[in-house]
Length: 386
Image (cartoon, one colour):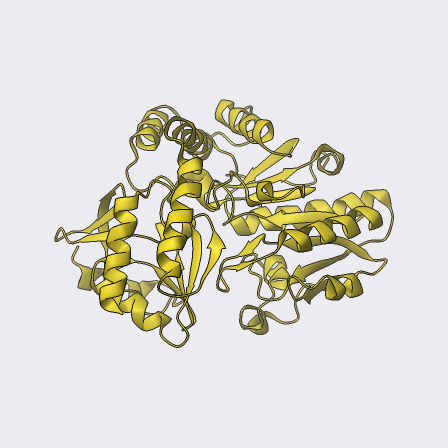
């Protein structure tokens, strides 16, 4: 089909949740590049919103998926699944988590973390039900995760929201301390807020929150849906600090493009889930978990987490000579007040894919395979556009 036919079908039959999208349709990709049917090349510096950590058509991932498709797609969790068990062990071997539950998305992972926190306190019988989150946060689009999200624009149409959530400014420990009550069950924080413009929570703030949580039997949950899987130059962003979460979530890059999410928890809280307390039909199926294992294989063989750290430092240095930069590793926000949308549009016209947060921040999330040459070409293009 031609692009205009697809647009017509979309307007006729697809719910208008995305509005008018960028006028392009990609048919294939390789490495850092995506291509249209006409063969026009776009350099991908957005990675499907931090999903395509390996870039496009990565041989390790595609080979593993082809082999799995030929064998088995789905059985349900009524039965043992080899890839599911292997991926769970891979995550527990490399993180603070002792147990893992797989689902299908970041929103589901955060929903699962909320349920786990609530049932943990319910089974303790301590009456704690409330959850503190941050202003400008984004945790998903289910009713519970919209309630957790600290942005009114996502919440207003769905009132009344799920009760028990409160929101505080980031990096303000006095405000956080003031929000804690005897009913506070958990805290959910993104180590770096992505969707609202790449805002970094300081190590000092996270440590202070950790100390308050430990003292008051409050569970600390890190939403690592976007910051995890190498994006910040560590496997998970909490690893930049001495702070250990009780629960953390993962999704996006975990499957390299195949939908998968994970709730990861230390054993003392994970055991609050008993058989029947939580579940899902598709979560952790053979295809999705095979994708996750292939992502870890590529990380190990090609040093991609280390590359994210090195290239992130280089990229930030290059961009800092142009405009103020926020972020860590390859999760970057460049401040262009009042100009971000225009610059993102100009980059698109010149064959570069990035995001814009409002009209103030250029959001850059390249695949972890990015090289200095890729970065140099991007920076050169950006300078010419400016």
